[in-house]
Amino acid sequence: MNNKVVFILGPTGVGKTDISVKLAKEFNGQIISSDSVQIYKEFDIGSAKVTKDEMQGVVHYGIDILSPTQEFSAFDYAQYTKEKIKEISSKGCLPIVVGGTGLYVKALVEGYNFGDVQKNKEFRDKIEDEIELNGLDYAYNKLLELDKDLALKVDGKNKVRVIRALEIATFGSKKEKSGKSDFDYKIFALNLDRELLYDRINKRVDIMVENGVIDEAKSLYEKYGLVQPMSAIGYKEFIPYFNSEMELSRCIDLVKQHSRNYAKRQLTFLRSMQNIEFIDVLDRDLAFEKIKNSIKIFTK
View 1: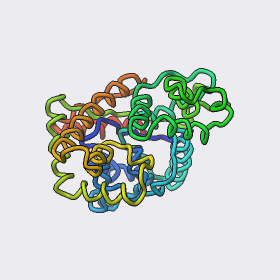
View 2: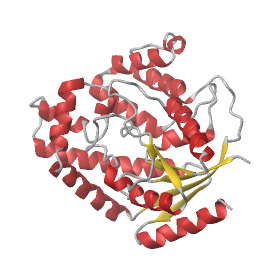
View 3: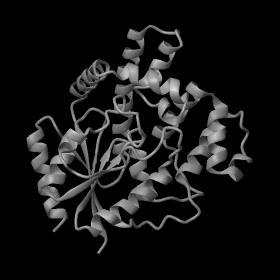
View 4: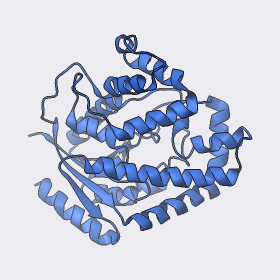
């Protein structure tokens, strides 16, 4: 029988950490993070990285596994996570994949097809942000690293072509998509009324500021420059302030705005996925019970 895996997904700020840890304790589970920033060491406050206290003794993977100078693609994530799923299952534990980077999960459960990679809005928005921050040459150099042969066929000054090629290089592989996953899975997407979610996001940014995210971002910017995680929301917005180009209050407002926009894109992306169950978390206890009962049936 294939390994069984539970996914707890959802937009930023919805409260995935608390519910996933409770589920892990209920089902002898171990958690694999699906967050494209929390994989990096030192990027803590701005990524809302799960703390040791929040883990409550539950084993977590995919946290602090890379230095800030390393690149990490959706393909890399899929390979890493498949190995961890096997490892966790071999211990008799339930693998629980938790996060908001939907393209990572889609790459994991839906496989690859080099010649038929669909356009991915979340991925394209991310690359657009990186180009705005670092320039088109940065994106083209990333393409060269991922697939030199493909890069040489693309006009490096044509932004549209570079983004499309990065899409293919990131989501494609030379093996044909089999249509079958390596494991049985159940996907839950946590959701909340938009206004309530946006209010949670705004308050979370305020807490990050109180906890020192500005000093963290400044230190990382001075230490590493424009590395991949520095283009993430919660870090990139402060760069104009560090360069004396923007008032701090405006930068904080942009973090809130970009976080809200990202949450909206995350939900749109999740709705495009198949076999996914949305769970309203207004009543968190009720939401937990619904997910718990569904997992009991799934893991029988």
